[in-house]
Length: 408
Image (cartoon, rainbow, N blue to C red; front, side, top):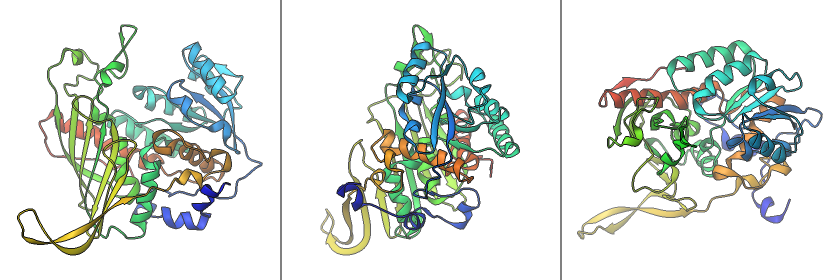
């Protein structure tokens, strides 16, 4: 390890302290177990399905993993997967790959509408599953997934990047240490303006055509849930659309480009979430956590610097000349956790979505090897996913206040 990496080196006990959370959260989700002793004699043989998003992970670098096979419906994407993962075996479809007895786990980097059915088929075939987000697009499939994972006894994990971003790792550490005091509100936003360029390909609509923003909520909901373990219990959602002809005829019957949801949690924390596909916006995935003693604000742009505000009241004057108590504002210097012993040595490099991809790779493989629940297990995955489904239902009903079912 170089000097820069050793600066942030942590052992397993130290990080378990960093990553812990409330007892209530622990009842439904493990917290990180990185930096444990590698089981060199255990090799998980994985199949990777999906030659776009699936290209951005590092299973071939993990000491406890072998990429056994890859699959995509398009030959050029299969070739790209084989080249990236140095794998000589490919299949024309998921169905064929699932018949391979050597494959014991799969990474489903497939279109969102296929996730539920692909997970169910993979579990039925006896494979451990890592799946891209979201877990499902309707509440009925959420229930099916929960039951199937429970009956299978297999490992299921959702590849939610926001839960593993370097900033989120730091905020989780701060929350565990009590630095926020009591959180009194939180907010998150995922802005992806210009998404309509992905609505059509070769003149044909793709699965993204008209996708309701709140059916893709997990990049936001995970910012709060993965840190505190609380659950979103009710919501009022609102949407914005402009009667654009681009949205006409979409399979979701969705009229909205952008959606905003106002959630309440089981700890009575107000939580505002915005998912926006169009407008004068900066592309960003960011969260805010506001507490009595400290607040943390991720940057407005990527990359950028986060801001901490501490309630160390100092007397000062406001713009009107009145005496007030002024809080202390500081820039947060983000540690690069991927440089540390939280990951096996071959994975200690930067990766996509805020350094999250190597952590997702390791968390899934390590969970299988050590027979433990991953951080984003089925309960967490549905806790991130289901609130957005209900928020969209609320937006279609002009903001009607709706309860969110629990899948714990």
